[in-house]
Length: 63
Image (cartoon, rainbow, N blue to C red):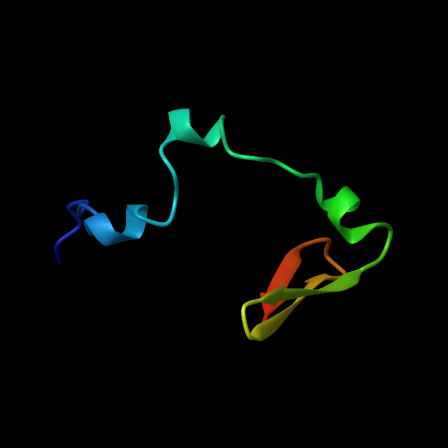
């Protein structure tokens, strides 16, 4: 059995900005975005997505 750590494929890091870049990205508090609610709709092009806060206080985005 091989227990040696393996490098992650480079594509797995493509979805996360580098640490120094994340400081310059616009940031909004989820409470401001949700405006006191637990669910909202987001239109993106021709698609509509639903963002909701779960009972365990996590965010879920679904199409």
